[in-house]
Picture 1 (tube, rainbow, N blue to C red):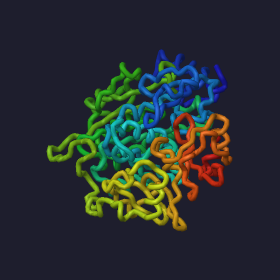
Picture 2: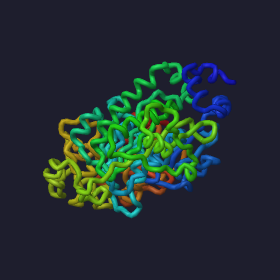
Picture 3: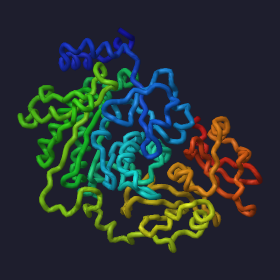
Picture 4: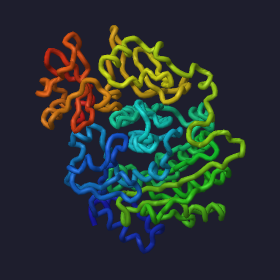
Length: 494
């Protein structure tokens, strides 16, 4: 056995012996094998044909857009990674959002969202391929209580080109007081003891203590208690962890169901998705009906699936018979005060600097659509998926950041560059690999041989820099050169 096995905590090993019985040796042997590495296509931008150069990819059974890749491959070094075409994610972590799978136009909450992989995955399911620019796909509220962790969340949403997300850093109780029965779908990928990460992260094993599952279970039940208030009747809730401990999995779910009889477990397609069922026998003191229903939950084990480990439970909230909505996000649950606010920001009320930028640098007139909710906070201009009342909440991002109005001009954001397409930019250049890498290092470049012949001589247009047809960021055309406008924090990613 490897040193990893030798360092595993004894309380954890004793628990796994009891749970797995004759499968214990196979489970332990999995820790001597390499960790599973995965990436998930960003369906907002591409399909598998765009990443063939990454080498052999093995499909992840529970996520159609997820793939395992070879150990020697380094996808984060790819320019296409910087273009937001895929997200690097451990395979089993793809399962919660794939099982929840919201529909286009719905209102969705990811309450423990950082660093953002699952939020991006949810956003891809929320947008149909038929929508016109700008495409929103409903309302995604991505929340993480940690302001520092939310920075990575914001960046990953922006890189993926997600335009329908609001990022908050709030406690569950404060969200519950504002968003009563508002969401169609909620994902709770809960903080946990992280037993499923021991092979991947030895520090997680070192931090493990015998009482950690108990303290995590108390936190999980508190989160679910508040989440229960935010799901609309008929809506769906996924609870998940990356731990094996039954106290935090079947135990937390059974405690929640006992306290909230309006919720019930929904079956998960275990055979079709390559998942194992949960077990009521691993928890004690559970009502017999609930214990039987726990077979609907799902587990991923490292010795028989391409993943480090996960637990997923899919639940629904019973309808009361008084609902008037359709369940597609068009209903009127919650936020009635927000509905009473001015519903739209019309073209005539948009800052002149922004209007001038759009006319000079974009082909699309989509931002002038009076149905859009565009608001200004300080100098920043945001497009919000719905007219949400966020007053009094801790907001990291109140929508898709379009840019800044400053000194009489509009400066577009990196988020805008990643959220539009090459075809929507009036001025765009396609860079070869060598120049694209230079751009990502923050260098300015000469105008390519193809030039930008249609640019007026009296302006300094904003040019969308692209590679393989996908945006990387902005540059200004100044005296025959492309002056790099990539934010420093993004340039450091290469």
